[in-house]
Image (cartoon, rainbow, N blue to C red; front, top):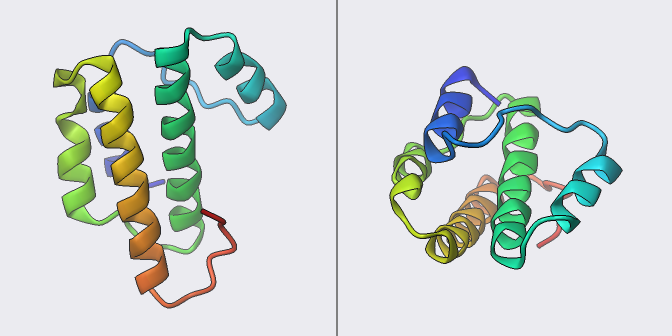
Length: 107
């Protein structure tokens, strides 16, 4: 993930700790302990982070229109944020698909 991407993510969720959880099991355990609305947002945010990490490994940037939409998430209510993150994830998957490379990521 590029520095710009990380800044956009911090803007989207400024009240959250911005510590990456490298251990997938630990991340899943923490997500499972959240309230249902928070859990859905955490799941979608984790998916987004995984795709951003993949893009970074391939030296690709997150498309600017996705970053622009990401920056407005903190203004939305929690359920709306979850739905918007889900839509952004879908847009990012479509971008990866359109890039023409076998991403190895399943929808």
